[in-house]
Length: 467
Image 1 (cartoon, one colour):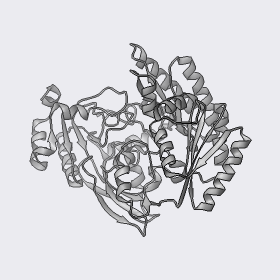
Image 2 (cartoon, rainbow, N blue to C red; image 1 turned 90 degrees about the vertical axis):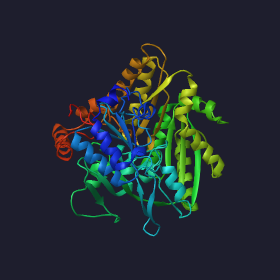
Image 3 (cartoon, helix red, strand yellow; image 1 turned 60 degrees about the horizontal axis):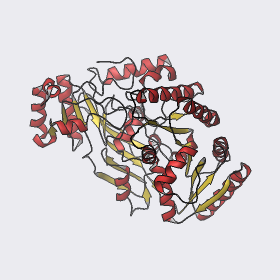
Image 4 (cartoon, rainbow, N blue to C red; image 1 turned 135 degrees about the vertical axis):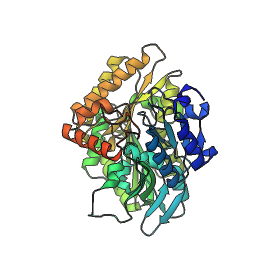
């Protein structure tokens, strides 16, 4: 073991191996390095050991031992987080839940299911494929359900189905001292007790470790159609998106790609018949008559806003190609500037301020001299700027400066520093700007009450908090 592992409490590692088995506790350099970071630009931190949990009981035993030894712990799922959530800045234990992939129950008549936290959305929907139901929250990557709950994830379908918050009925979570807590249930509403389920949603592993999730499911739509429309200006594209929402069209997805992102995506995903112009990708879902009605309303809005055509189709292969290109936007950006890395921002504002924010951000990008395509879920006022970081000594510093400028612009318009990526290490400095001081005090009280020894993901979420 390296020096970091040597600083670990050897007695703790021995106790973990005795309880869980040698194969579930690793101190090898390669495994520890894999668990030292997510996909963001935050400096990696090596854990002293990695524990691979297979059950809620494994998690409970691990937390009870860590708490007794006062050793910090960070939960780890797929490692796809962007704000340093899974980085263990104080070393300690990285608790990997990716082997907890069981679907525990499916209730088609009630349209719900219970899963272990390590299952991904893709695997869950593959399991559900013969039930006529699906789980719609789609953050784009191979995120685990537990990680999505911990970071209050969202995605392309949120405009229709809501975020993870609206699709969780209950949880099983392990508290810092190893106690197991079940929250919520299977009913669609309850007027009893504090809402502990949604206290844990978005808590980023600082209040407890989520091990099981009771999820709402939705019927697979009878009809699905996709459409693409391009515009001469970004402001026209944004105004069209806002009109669609204000007309009450129950749109399934509503995504914006600016001219730079479209240029990258056309090259990477081989999109034919499209130009490097601001573009909306749309999806309509429902019964056949409903879909036709939605298309008719949107087509009229697009015509009034000067859209350059309105191409829609229902062929599954063509729809899949369109959304595959949207999901591959990040990789298209990396291919657009070989040798560069990417930093993804996460700005969100009320939709009435979306046009002002995006136009302002485009000006910020131009002033920075960086290449930064814009892509986002404009259906809920959220978008991402994929800042391409040049491989120069000052490249990362320039990217961080642009990132901070975008966040402050969103906050000034009544928005949030994060619409779906969470706080982690990266956005702590903005919590005092976004939240009332009394609210932050209450958050700190909750943290100290549920985690008095400060072992759960220390240094994350709340500014100024330390063990």
